[in-house]
Length: 471
Image (cartoon, rainbow, N blue to C red; front, side):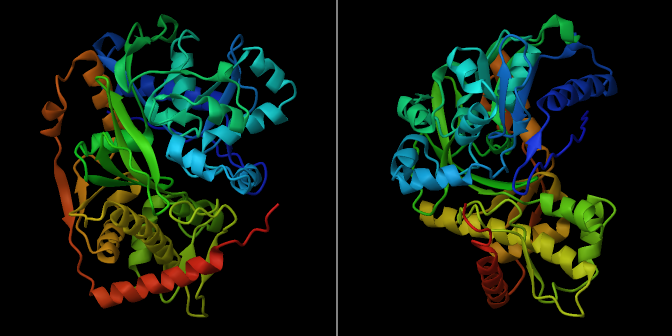
């Protein structure tokens, strides 16, 4: 049984994206109650709670009142791009990559925390006095689930802050100094699969154990059972996120990918290479809400399929800049190739194709880092149910695309980690036997045609880059 609710996307200025942290919390309690009721279960029937979350979205709250000091700053938010420019100009890129596995970018939490402390009246002084707490959404939910008794995170989320040393598994003092974040605001880092503590009985969830935490993309990697080095998945959500398991080694990418903690369990930390596309499925939401050319997101496939090709139209959805492997915070959305014959269907098709092209760029970088070709790409997330796009994805990467029977693998991975944490499953091998493919998309487009399409995509990409003037 599943339940879900949308919550508001807040856009105070161009390039800024916020969420109401209290609304996130209330939505999660609401869907938990709804899911239990729908399954005719009581809290005592639940073995454990697993949490997965948008990893870089940043919340700062008052330890005494539990109230956020402002809206959460979302992972897509670009307000600290100028801070990142200064850090790069000061020569910090090498140190950041060596310690954290990340590039310097406004995507990550560290500069967001500092911005909040600098721009909310009195926040920095309160933080340095130990009165404020910082967390990504997992920490915020655990704090509320435990009525403020637990302030913690796991390494997969900590590794996305630009404050965490992925090699030592600790918050890094030099990163804290560089980004001006006081240690007193930080959560404790625990493993991704263990019993952290019970839910407060005041919430009507009895004493259910909170026993698993992983950032959304690492949870999806686990849910896809990509538990051996080389196995790779791509999640098509608001953004697109491609991860490849690298085992217990943390290789530094030579092609502008990220090195991230996949998970830590049983005292062993495993890692992944990652590429992130900022705007994936969100481009379909834009077609619906911004342009109004579809009534619901599900309508996009039929509209796109009503034309045989994109009619020469290319859409680069750089609404929040470009992520890997480009890392251009000043890129902006671009629509090129329009003629009088262009229709809403061509734009819809260009939007779906853009998701696939961006993912293909990630895969090229990943294969260049790995030095070995990929056997298959496992896919999940809401947009992975779009057959037209999945076939096009296979065509432009020249690799089979495999969709599992359960595409909500982010939630599945969090459930697996929580179940392992309380002993509901004894081993990963026991879980692996449950993974099943639902459909396999084989490449069918001639290679010359695929290469020509990608070449034009690359031209369109060049038109979008560095559009916004630097501060």
